[in-house]
Length: 168
Image 1 (spheres, rainbow, N blue to C red):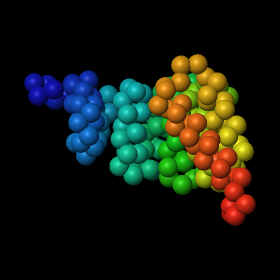
Image 2 (cartoon, rainbow, N blue to C red; image 1 turned 30 degrees about the horizontal axis):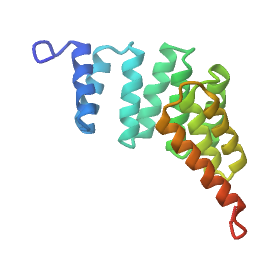
Image 3 (cartoon, one colour; image 1 turned 90 degrees about the vertical axis):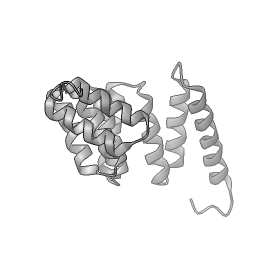
């Protein structure tokens, strides 16, 4: 990239390296550069959106993921990313239908299931959150760490629901 600063893949690679080093400000700078050099690359826009999201810049994140969705309108992954961005921005009413549509397109989209279960739990719909967790656990190849976290979350939900002094 130093030899050719107009090389989008080079800027993107530098951004990914900074991401790996947990240097989000530098990563964001290079993701912006990569997208400016190659504005029709949907994957770069997705990663820029996620970088904006990590920086708490929700409107910028939403703008970038919507651009990626224009470039790849059938992508359930990008739709799910939009749902996550809306959720993190506090737009739960907007996030829920987007996450549900993601799962209609791709019923085995684990991140969308996880995010929908978080949304349900946050909005006090514990039984719906438990159903999502059960659906996730049926998907083959679930990461063992995620599986353990989901089982623990399900136990917490059940314990909270069973508690007589629970405010749920």
